Length: 44
Image 1: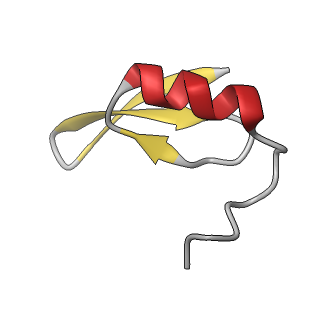
Image 2: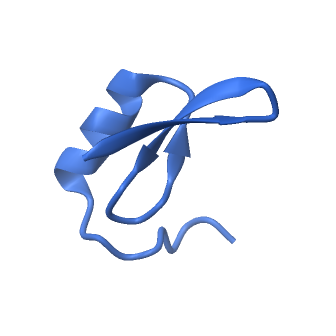
Image 3: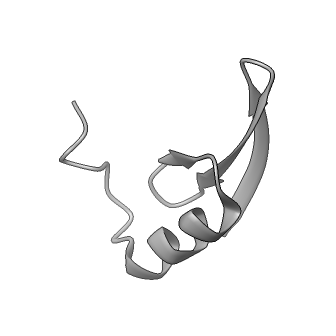
């Protein structure tokens, strides 16, 4: 599921499985379809 949140006066869409945030709702939905529920290893 994707949650809508506001941070730094911007709207973000957060993947509820791993917490990764996107500025486009469609990007978040596409990510969620492939998300394994773990923290994104490519973000440090």
